[in-house]
Length: 362
Image 1 (cartoon, helix red, strand yellow):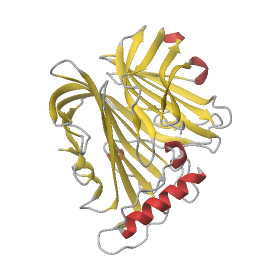
Image 2: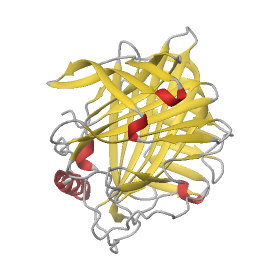
Image 3: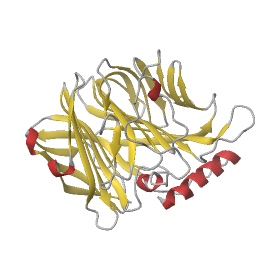
Image 4: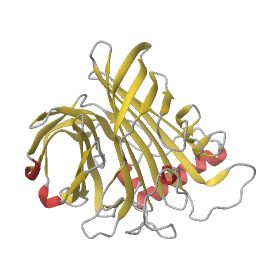
């Protein structure tokens, strides 16, 4: 949207002059609503291929590599971690720069650790540079400084994931042998009721995770399940959309469910909704807006904003009728681009866990 230009200019100016001043706070939704004019558009029918599309797509406006994981430590305590790296093209035309600097590409990374009592989050951002931030394909690596996803091959897995902040750190091993799941129609994921906005979008919701998480100096040996979303576009939202509610739900060991809705900026009501039931063998089934019911049941007030942290989700045709409850309702990401993100528990027709993201409530 129109506000995203302000954020990108502020970020790029700070990066170019080495300024420590933080960019003005913007919503994640407004940041990703920038017009696609002069950038490569998303078109239906273009094939997503692996491992090529794990790599960056610099001719598109926005892109992300987005991992969440539900973990359990040696005492049986539940916790969650998030790691995300965003790429933003500041200008549609790559211009020559001195040395290895890539002035039109910027990266921002978020990391977080959440338990039922604490939620810590941090961020890094940098211009693209081989020594500072970027994406490499052989072998696959996504990094800003020492925050990095590093594979031993061109594929995403097997891999290690590392991030370190003042209050927390994690060092994790990630493995998966399940097929990737293409969202929407073979990876063409519509984001509006009039089909005018879309992204390329695929997921891997069946990742085995193990390693160490340190919180406030206390080390925890952890195991659990992870989920990565890969998405790129030149415009994710319309001006008439204020944000979204996104759920990555693990219904059992072999079945996961992604559900998301985008909200109208005038009414706050659902503008567009979509879901996909995904099986570990690579099969799946999609559901349209009229097959899904999403209802916010309880809200949590955080710094003047009200976030819906308990939800009721139904897909009657699949006998899915669940309550989704935040492990820690206070899991707002207090970063340059603020939003709510944290682990959830599932009860009702299915029992499990997952992650929830809420934007546009600032």
